[in-house]
Length: 382
Ligand SMILES: Cc1ncc(COP(=O)(O)O)c(C=O)c1O
Image (cartoon, rainbow, N blue to C red; front, side):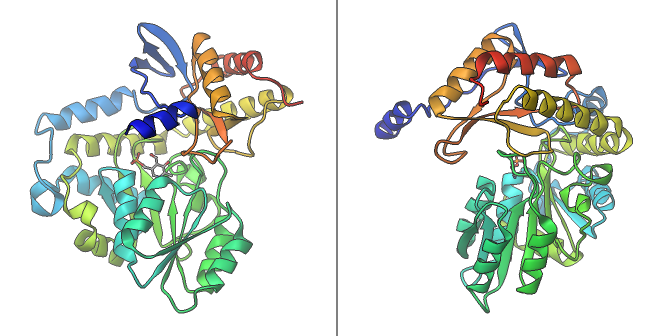
C-alpha cells in the first residue's frame, strides 16, 4: 500500500472525495460555500425534483428496504412497474432492473459468454465492461476507439467462436458517440451479438430521449442487448438491461449479480418511475440541455479552448498533464465552479482533462460564467 501511495503522490494521481452538501439545482455547497456544479451526471436536472422525493417518501411509508434478493422475496410491484415502463419506453420485450450499472454490466457479460467465447470491445469502454469481460473468462480483445475497420480485423481473426461485441453508446470520459450502425453491421456479418451500454445516452439523446440506439435508427435486431442506468439522466440510482424475453429470463436465472444481492429498495424504483415519466413528459429539459451544450461549444470554440468532438452533455476540456489539470480544477473551484479533473487510469496517460458536464439545471448565465473562468485559468491553444 505504501508503494502504491508513493506512486500516486509522485504522479499527481492521489484522489480525494469532496464533501459536498445542500444541492439546489446546479448549485452545491462545500463548507458552506456555494459552487456551481459542472461535474454531475444529472443531465436533466431531475435528481432534486420534488416529485421524485414525493414518490420516494410515499413508497418508503410501506418499507424502505426490499429485505431480500429478487428471487427470494425482494421483487415488488414498484420493480415490476418500473420494468414495464422502461420496456415500453425503449420498445423492448422486457427489462430487468439492477442495483447499479456496474452490476448490470457484470451480469450481462458474465452470463452470456464464457471460457470458449470472446468479447471484442472499444478501447475506451467503461471500466465495468472491462471487469465484466475479465470475470467471464472469455477471450478479450479491444479495438481502437470507434475504429470499425479495426473491429472488422478483430472479428475476422477468431472464426468460429461465439462473439459479443461491446461498446458504450456515449463514451463517459470523451462524450463522443459510437458509430452504432457500422458496428452493428460488422457484428452481424460475423454472427456476433452487440451489446450497447448507453448509460449516458438514455434519457438525453435520440427521439424522446430513447438513447443513442434509437437516435441512430437502430432497434432490437441490431442491438439485442441494451444497458442503461437510473443514476444519471433519471437522477436516481440503479440500472437496467433491456432486451428480448429470452435474454431477460436468462439473466434472471443465471446472472450472479442479480441473484446474489439484495433487490433495489422499492422506494428507489418508485422514484425512478416518476423520473422516467417526467423525462418523457418534459421534453423542454432536453431542449434546454441542447441549448446549453451549443452555447458552451460555441463559446469554447471562440475562445480557442481545446475541446473534443462531442454533441452530448459531456464536454471534456483537454489539459494533458495531471498536475496541470488538478491546478486548473483548483483555480476554478476558487472562483466558485466545480469541474473535476479526470486523470489516469480513468483516462489514458497524458490525457488528463476537465470533464465538464452540462445539465438542464444550468442557466445560460452559468455557462457564461464557466466560459469566462476557463479562459482565465487555462492557457489558450490558439
Ligand atoms: C458507461 C457507463 N457504464 C456503466 C456505469 C456504471 O453505472 P452505475 O453508476 O449505475 O454503476 C457508468 C458510470 O457510472 C458509465 O459511465
